Length: 385
Figure: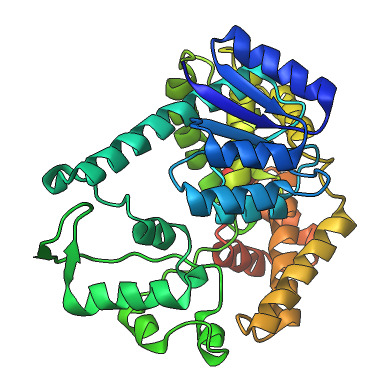
């Protein structure tokens, strides 16, 4: 029987969640005092820990941080009553397995717990293999170093940076549980949200490691700047989660639903889109995913979508932050380009692909209209449908 530790200071909610899990056969220890919950987590042999975010004395972030440092293989799921992208990202960076809104939707919650338990067992088997000394069967990527590299290259500690640099320079490793030095020939793909050049200046990132990694750079724009990718991402997440949740593949998203998804600002980028697709599948329960289902998923996953003024304010805040980090030189030019692209996108859509009509509304010539559509990757046959 899998053991689950629940840390939730709301007694009624804790009891309800405990009942849901116990009905499914889980052995649940519920702690309404976060201090007692963390103490139990330190001593107990749990497969999964579920913790609230805001609690008296100790926050869910502190629980995640300590448990990840003590037992990096233990999945910790964060529950929060308010959807904030920043909190979710911070939790994942600290080592959280996943997060879910409370009160959790039972089917979604149970699916997440089941997946976390399976992951916990797999990680435990890896550790046992390493401790037994069976180096030839050790699984690549299970070391603390590789887990840190996988998460965020720009957030590594100086000590971990030195270890990675040594691997890249010496081109050799030691397997988990082994003592033999083994030569390796690998390519490293690193991701970061930070300005590493600025981090070097501030002595937070090693310059020698930076030049070891910086052979070719791919800059990935935010999801709202590449709506043409959304349909393909929706198809991918749909296939992934129908298989994971055991739903039939017949309930595909409608064309209207996909178009509605393309129009969203997506402040949480691909992670937010992924969560919406998963939530929509749970709500549709095997039937076709309509725009109404997407609306419900958006309403349940977070606050109402921002108004035009709020969205513009968010864009300006993000652009100024990028300028402060040194990632952007001309905020006014970047903002003008964002506004212009949206203007032409909406005009050609409203005109149903009629470039002459859209150009007349905007006040430009048809050749200029054509050039702008080409510049921003807008296609009359698609964006005007």
